[in-house]
Structure formats: structure tokens, C-alpha cells
Amino acid sequence: MSKSIKILLAEDEPSLGQIVKESLETRNFEVFHAIDGEQAYEFYQDKNPTVLVLDVMMPKKDGFTLAKEIRQENKHIPIIFLTAKSQTKDVVEGFEHGGNDYLKKPFSMEELIVRIHALLNRVELKTDVENISIGNYTFNHTKQTLSINEDSALLTHKEAELLLHLTQKKNEILDRTFILKKLWGHDDFFNARSMDVFISKLRKKLKKDENVQIINVRGYGYKLIC
Image 1 (cartoon, rainbow, N blue to C red):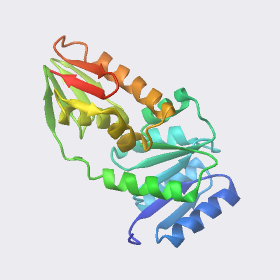
Image 2 (image 1 turned 90 degrees about the vertical axis):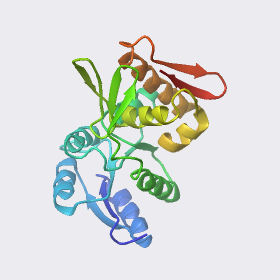
Image 3 (image 1 turned 45 degrees about the horizontal axis):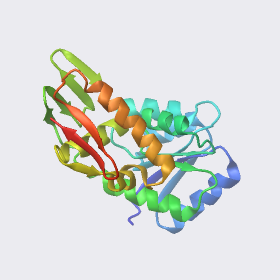
């Protein structure tokens, strides 16, 4: 890992923040530790980080708000949320605000580092893909838009990545375990529930073309039919 990999760590708990910072630095990451959301945004603008690791509950500006603001400027920078919250709705909210991954406290440093590496590898995932046809829809992964006729819907980062994988396996089965590990990090029940929510959201956004469906292939995964 090169020293050019810069981590913006936003964590208001001083002892935890210092431990995480020092642990990442021993792996040759360059780490900028912010103690609140406003300082984190300043670091984001000044330091040009490669990955964001954001605590959800922070003073001045919480992690969800910070991520939403950054996503308006940068749709592709990897974002990992750190939080003690663990309900499905909290995870979904994190992804809707632009998060790529969600790590529950307490966590191991090894798990955080594995997830950082996984996100860095995924950054290369077709960020230059332009218009993709899905029936009468046009999907633009880069802009995160889904358009039909004169209507255009803006997708969340997680919705766009999930739909991209579905389009790559159009009319074929997208393996459930594969996509859970690829986009959620683990194929456990908790993450599977979260993915089901996003599948439902995509189905609603694709309902204007009756020839387009996302079907559940029980025991295997999902299939985008068009």
C-alpha cells in the first residue's frame, strides 16, 4: 500500500480516533483525523483524501450530513460509516446518504483495513460507464441517473452500484452471495435484509416499463429481465 492512499478519519472520540489513526499509519496509510464534521469537511477540501471513514454521531455536523454534502461534489470517493447503530433502517439510511460500507462499533482494525482495501478495489468498477439501456430506460452509472421519456430519477450511490451489477448480468442470475460480499462486505442475514430494501427501491423506479422486472430466484439471487 502506497503512502499516496490518504484516509480522512472523522471520529469525535479522541482515544478511539488516535488508536485507529496510529493503526492505519502502521499499514502505511496517510491519515488525517478530524474531531467533528466541520473539521472533516475542511480536511476533505484541503487534503484530497482517497477514502473517507466517518463516524455517524459527531458534533457540529453528523456523518450522514457530511457524506450527503460530499456526494454532491464527488460521487465516487469510497465512504465507510462507523456507528453503534445496527438496525436495518440505519444501514439503509447510511447507504442512501452515499455510504459504500457500514462498520458497527466495536470493530477490529483488521476488519476496517480489509473493507478499505475492498472499497479501493471497487473504485475501479466502471466509473466511466455511460448510458446503458434497460428496456425503455437509460441508466447512466457515472451520473447515477435512471431516465425514461422525459422523466429522470437520481439514484443513490448504492442503488447505482447494485443496478450496474444487475445490468452486467442482464437476463441472467446475479448470485446473491456474490453481490452481498461485493457491495456489503458480508453475506449475513442483516446485510441481506438491507439489500432486499434496495432491490425493492429499484423495482419501484423501474415500474414505468412493464417489460422490465427484477425477479427473485429463490436460493440463488436476482435476475434483471428486459
